[in-house]
Image (tube, rainbow, N blue to C red):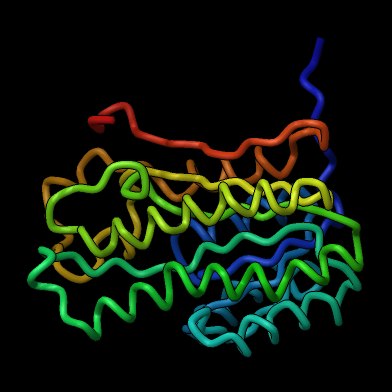
Length: 245
């Protein structure tokens, strides 16, 4: 018997961190599936180029720094103004600043917490009322990290923000499930993106050799969104065949 999946045609998905990597790959795959996407990112030139690539009938872009609550509200409003609804939101924006616990400055700690954790909260808080109002439910798919399941050396603060995202997703699942909102934390190990290099690594780092591609994680996002409404995935950990998981 063929697997049953939901048709994503004309569903509206809000994606943060959409100008590169996983966010851009997810936008492309969702548009291929017939969805409309509202894209948030800090780099206006890349955002404009991606909207042009996808087509104005399928995508809208808003310059958005998720660490600023008002920016998240503007992104959500753009989706509702354009298509009248929000079915799903993908809080994907994040930064990686790598270094030992004693090497991470107070400023960098605050930057990672504001973007990776608080930014996820603010994106969700902006979207949830509109999801409930316009569609009566939906999906929140948080792109976290395998570092949020098991921290490693020289990523203590980064891992802490990702553990916080995973905890947030679990709590929101319990809080919002009765209102028809499914919450998923997707936790990929290394992915071949600019983000993976981050601040403190270089492009030739041997640790990057076995990384997954952004499209691998994008496929997981779309798979979660396409599941029948009777099913929910709360946590999905992704590793390449060459990584030690």
